[in-house]
Length: 209
Ligand SMILES: N[C@@H](CCC(=O)N[C@@H](CS)C(=O)NCC(=O)O)C(=O)O
Image (cartoon, rainbow, N blue to C red; front, side):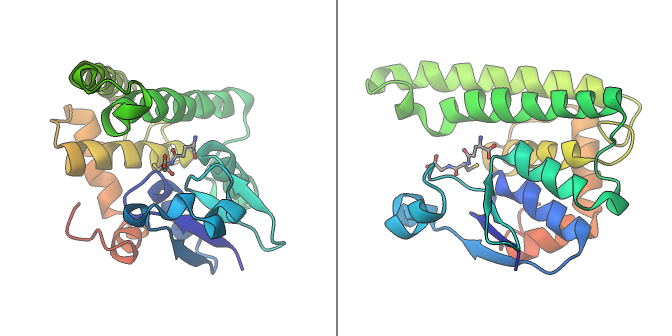
């Protein structure tokens, strides 16, 4: 059966939401980050990159990287209309996801949460964290502009909204930075979706959002 490896509240929440939107049966396997589970041999055998999300498909093959998993889920479930195949809309959707994943997650949040990966000199950490925060704030401003006059990033609900959700979740629940109005409204809209409510319950995060 399709299986999602996740850790609560991580970027894997976006893939979990997509699985709930699709509504087909799947299994969940939790990776215990507190116990460094991502680095243990049994998990490295699943994903040598030691990251979540990982999707194990029905044929037993694994898929990693948020954008790849999200696109694959959308294209294999076309009836759910989670990604337009119109070239312009598809390119714009991927443009937004790449910004959230490759710039905001990988560059900004990694500076904030995994600061030691940027410098082993502790005195430099406050500066690196501040850079990450600045990047998050810039991202919030750009995404707020993109959401102006729209309920969802692309007009219709797509995989991009699920990527934005994990970014919003971190801002709202974990770092508690103020969100600009359109982003805050998008986060509230997402939290009302049954798929998001199910995900929050299943990951033990229901109190958070
Ligand atoms: N580029 C990857 C990033 C995945 C990633 O960094 N996931 C984080 C959780 S949000 C993780 O597994 N971190 C564990 C670690 O770095 O030790 C993707 O988009 O899937």
